[in-house]
Image (cartoon, rainbow, N blue to C red; front, side, top):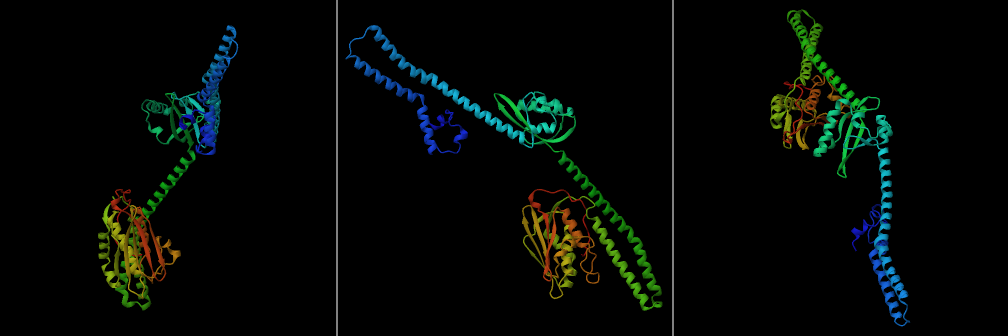
Length: 494
């Protein structure tokens, strides 16, 4: 039995009733029985066979009966002919017609039910759904469209969407896009959601996200437009953009102020330092020990102040100018950094080790040399007194990034200071304990962020610290935006 042909020809078993059912199940057996009974040709053949057998039986019996008059004989023949023709007409013409009407009625009822479900779904969706024909006339308008545009369904149906929801300045381009799609079947508007401006009943324009779906039915296109109000989203984006621009301007002004202030402060500081030194040379033998100590304190303060101003100048220079990204060998960067720190490494008796393949990254060589110098210098400075410093520089690849780390066996950092140490002028120890101004790690963070990476620390007090940072790999084939700053030429100790 051909189940495929019978399944769609029988209205008693619609797709929604048999979906997921096996034809070999009990319902499948009932279905097959129903098809056998309702097949007109089998029932017709059976009926004709029964009637034919009955007629033969009658003819045989009539041979043993007295001969009937001609009119009675013709009447019997006519009756037998009617008995034969009536089942044929019934099963071939009338019964299929009744079945077709019954099937059409059930299909129509199913279509009405599906249409009601679809209408309910369209009315409860969060998007305004507008259906229109190739002429742009509105033929469908859900409840969300009424709420969004202010037009009730009875007022909008049949009107051109170009006249009621498309702003006048966009009429021409909207019509051209529709005409292009009708001619070619292709248009960007029908491929993906786009942001557009639409018009409500009161004449107010507002931004919306529009997606258009097309369906060809009976040789003619029908369209459904899904519209979502994005006014709040656009407003939030504009607010965020304004705040971001304001923050960028503020940071730029602060950096400019720091640069100018630091530059201008050096001249009076040099004058103070010069006159203090002059006083010491001319009147040193006439001063008592306390006065000479005071002069020494003044000179030390001037030197420290000069160092602080120089560091502040260097910090302000990071990010002043745009720099192109280029492939940089980390092997060369580390070699140059260690050469610059050769004396400090020798004095401390530090051992520098490397682990992993130091890849090429996208960046600026001068900045990266400064980054490694600061981190290694930091590891040497905050070493443990009980053991010689051992510093491990490692590298591993992760996706399109290079994750680097500088690990030491020094004094370590308490967890509550993991974030604070990257702040400007942040020091965990007094000036007498360790040299430095507290700017080195702040510069490291600024350099890493300018390379579109991030930096963080993990540490165990008394066992050492590990500074991690990420840089973009050079071999990923994608260059991030250019660096928005200038390289930092000098080493600053944290």
